[in-house]
Length: 217
Image 1 (tube, rainbow, N blue to C red):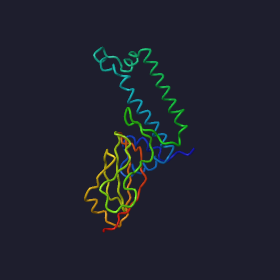
Image 2: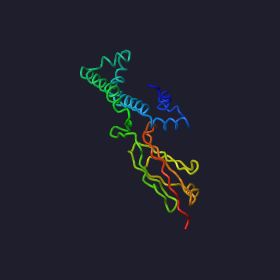
Image 3: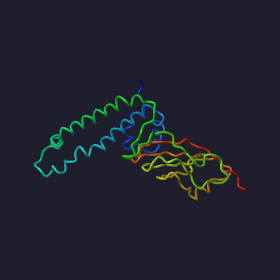
Image 4: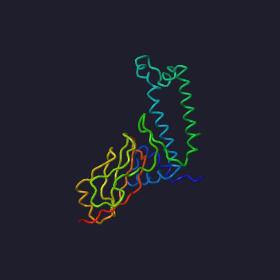
């Protein structure tokens, strides 16, 4: 199977090393590439496991620093009870099952992103609410469907070029008066929203919806 040309950029994207056009180009690609999507999901699963289990595995490390010095790995291993060893084994087996058993079966589906302990969102198209058809006057706000509290949205408004962009955690944003004055009647515009997780990973993209502002009365 031919390797995707963008595969080598996945780690750079996760570590926020891609900038400007390179970052946007990668986001446009991986959101439509099943292979890159799957690899992003695997990395998210690993990061989530480390984040959720790491503190538990080494919770006694700080207290042990008061005793005679022993290598950290020996302290960690010696502090495990049989039940903890069993739990670690089960967790490791479950993770391997997810990465190598379950995920390949869903290679063509969108990945799931863990936003918090209670919120998980599947990477998919983000639904725009207003405006989605031609309007009689210049809109005062843009609105879209919320994906959760731990999500940051970037909205972009275009005519022949990028006219305005902004970032918000709400699912609705007011249009600045300066921007509204540049939206002349009779012109056609397009807008799009991208959703990002707290780690800055792109998790959803809306379609680019066009609308026209009606002529002044």
